[in-house]
Length: 567
Figure 1 (cartoon, rainbow, N blue to C red):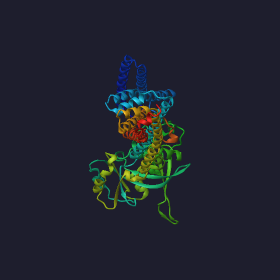
Figure 2: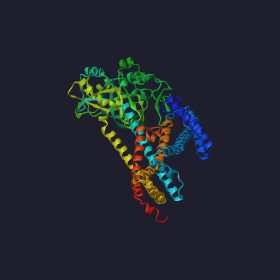
Figure 3: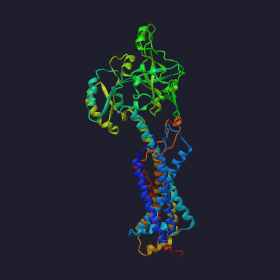
Figure 4: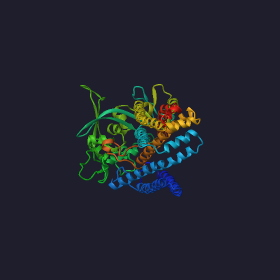
């Protein structure tokens, strides 16, 4: 494992090739600008190309660094990743700035009167104060666009990470009763479900809430009785088990708890918060049921403890490792002389999983389907059938087909969006609220554009009067000033969005390390979506365009005699 990037190396290679082509174009333009005598623009383009070369080199170096999770972290690795991100941002922003004169040239040559005058006004030398206000306008719009695009990317990253973890640890479609009680005769239902087009897998499950206790602590847990042969087709339990590590099948000790008697001394029985591995060693006490099953039965000894797979956080709470014992206590037990007596049963830890979601790692435990049925006294009944589909995003479209396949009025069919409806509704509302709140920052920045255009109107009042005297209409003057304001807003928007895109893409590629004990993730999740950045660009340009209406109307209403009165 040599790459810590979420994107495949070919995708990064394509991006590097595109940047290399851009660098070549910039260097060629710099040569042309030198021949034209435009040394400042040539210097800017040469610097952009040099920074791009630095970015390509650091990107190649970063690809060869070890992955962030579970690997040694050094200051050098962090410096290389930070350097690659900074170089990428500078290259993208510098390229955007270098393309501004090219865009103004195209506007001047477009043949439109308003575009020509607006581009000349933006390029013209202004008074010192007006130049400062124009720069502040561009900076304010850029800052607002950058903050909005960055916030949307981070929130989208958290939402996507949460969705990925939910879909990895839960079924896409759940079939149970309205009261979530046990029901039988499920084998025909399973066969019909597996024959539905688009269904990847289906598995029976028994669920129940109990109390888990160890020698030092206790916690409330949700027991999942699973079919080990089919559970891997529905959820990622096997992939999430981090201890033990020496067995090829991560559920081997759950299926055959007798194998726990043969743990080797170097067997990993737990993972620390920093990724450190805890091995069995030789100082642990022997198992209380460490006898051959035949000998134990002949001697009338204690039965073999069934296996139990627990989450990392629950293992930390109970202070247990693979091979340790825990006791499950259910309030629904047998009837005794004093009433209903709690049912208790001792289990052996057969594995520890890490799903990435604290709620699951702290409350969910897994045992075999037969053991859960025996513990809860359900006979051959189950409580749930869990289904996985090919396209999780469109799982709701298969709900009707699954309902028809179930063909039982006592069962209900729910997809993952319906089950987590409140959670995703809250996330969606939060994204909308954040977008609207941060858009206010762009609205405030647009006031600078208003001030710039009003000051421009005052400074250019003589030129406006002369243009009107020569036949320019109010509509031409209105479009000229609106175009000028849109140019200022577009420059600021492109700079802000380019900075946000470069920074967020770099963080998504190279990663920002976080403390997993605090955030329960080892890197900042970033989701770079073209639709999100398009929405930010459109919103910023719309706000800036609306802001130009008032000063443009004021300039259009200026009479020639008023503009030339004091000249």
